[in-house]
Image (cartoon, rainbow, N blue to C red; front, side, top):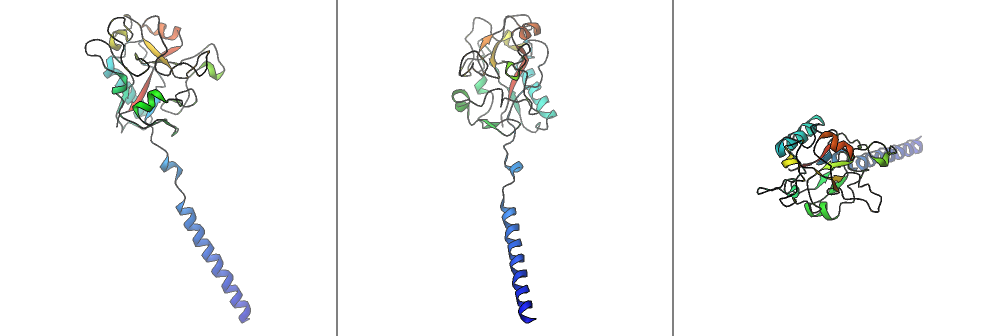
Length: 227
């Protein structure tokens, strides 16, 4: 009996010790949800709906802020990636903070402003998600007759404003009738590889909502957290 009791005691001790060590091991495992980067970038799930008239930069920023708030990220400060032209020109790259920025799924899109403009492979249909983590309509998703992949930017490849002259910003985002808008391709879709630029691809035929839809857009914006 003593031998049996001693053996039982040894087994019990081993089980208890293993359980404690296992528990410690599990406790030491990283919390994936806690470690996932906070959302700092999204493509708007919808446009303002008035063509190139966004209410200026302030109106565009307010749209970003409102959508972020709906998605539970309103505690951060949001700005639209847009440039303006003229004597008081604003560069989109100067409006969006310093990064890093992750999408709604926790994928880091860029680590800095320089990285954003010169190493931006994550800016594509797979990762350029809206504030709810959803993808926008693109020819890539199998519906070649419907796309909303044009994103308003008014910017050149390096994120700076176009010089004064031809209007590429719908009168600095205050008009749905004057000028035209310059857009990027959120899905980086083109008939060439590696694809067209995310922030500077082509102009629209005009600034009405119909003009934006005509060439594959819906007046969507890129929004970045600045803090």
